[in-house]
Structures are given as structure tokens and as C-alpha cells.
Length: 257
Image 1 (tube, helix red, strand yellow):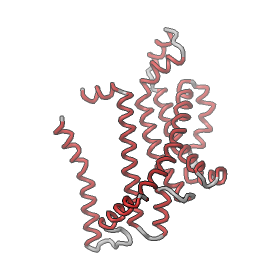
Image 2 (cartoon, one colour; image 1 turned 30 degrees about the vertical axis):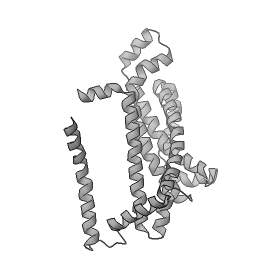
Image 3 (cartoon, one colour; image 1 turned 30 degrees about the horizontal axis):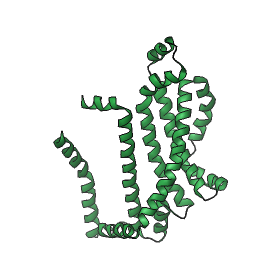
Image 4 (cartoon, helix red, strand yellow; image 1 turned 135 degrees about the horizontal axis):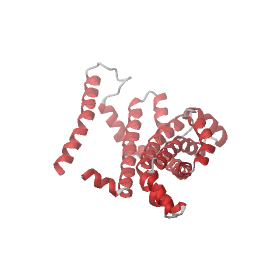
């Protein structure tokens, strides 16, 4: 088992290693000018310098704090509306048309309006993140609830289970996998939303730092920000995956079987 995990991990490293080798060759051979693609050493120096000064950690923490605020609101409202709309067709029809129309509007189109409503402070960034992740969570929650075996639902009703017990004992276990898919997708788009919002209207955060470096043609800093986003996003996804495994122990059993 341990050997299999090590081999799987090494297999995951093959493509990143090839990309780094191609990057090193392209920049050192002169095939790609440094103005287009900085050298690995320049990016490494940028990462080390920003870590030493604490600027990178500060930028990441600011962006993560914004994500957590907007994402937490999206989780609460996305799960609540998703469960109710999934269990009640009348509520689904009542809200479905409006939500479907709003979902078609690109996130970038919301930014100027939200800045006008909430200003350039934290509220507008949180609102952008909320809108970006809300629909991912909502749709996957509705899908999971609606895919619940109706025979089990009928059995629950036959035993006169309350709506709460019906949800807790029948709908929720069936829908959890789909719900966590929505939570992961919502977390992923939250990063896109916060970086986009910080690039347009912010004076701090990783998105602001990337946009500021782009304006100064400081591309090692741009790549540093992109790498920081990737690493932090993966770590947050890992944490969410661990929570999912803790909430769905039967999934671990099915994987080992």
C-alpha cells in the first residue's frame, strides 16, 4: 500500500518536472525572451525575496480572508436554497427562473455594479466571491437532492418521518457526494473571483500584486503570485477533501474494496 502511494505520487510529479525542464531550456537557450517568460532563477529569487519580506504571506492572507467571508456566505445560502429547492418543486419553480437568468451573467460584468453599490472596500470583493461560488453550490446541492432514490423517500413518508428526519436520514446521505462537488467547485471559482476583483478595484491582495507587477513589467512577481494562488488553492482543496472523507466514511470503504 505504501509503495503504491509513493509510485502514485511520483507519477503525479512527472508532468510538472517536464514543464520545469522545458521552461528552463526555453529561457536559458534564448528560444523565449525573458520579457515573455522569466527564468526559473528569477522567479525563485522573487519568491524568496517576497517570503523574506513577508509581503507574499500578507497578500495571500488578505485574499484568503476575503475568500473565506464570501465563500462562507455562499455555503450557507447555497446549501439552504439547494436543499429547499431540491425537496420542493414549487419552490424550485419559483426561484429557478430568476436564478437561471442571473447565472448567465459573466462574473466580470458584476464587478463594476458591485463596486458602485458597495464601493471599493471589502464588501464588493466579498459580494463577487459570494456570487461566483453560490451557484456552483446551489446547483450541485439541488442535483444531489433530486437524485435521491424516490423509493427510499416513499418509505420514509410511509413511516411518517418529519421533513427534518426525511432530509437528515434519507436525502442528506444520498446528496453528500454531489454537495461536496459543489463545495469544491465553489471554492475553485472563489479564487478566480477574488483575483479578478482585486485586479479591478483593490489596493491589497494577491490579485492586486499581480496586476501591479504586470503594469511594471515585473513578470517574476506575476509568476510568484500565480504560483502562490496554485499552492494555496491546492491546500484549501486538500482540507475540503479531508472534511468530505470525514463526513462520508462509506466512500473510504468503497475505495478500499
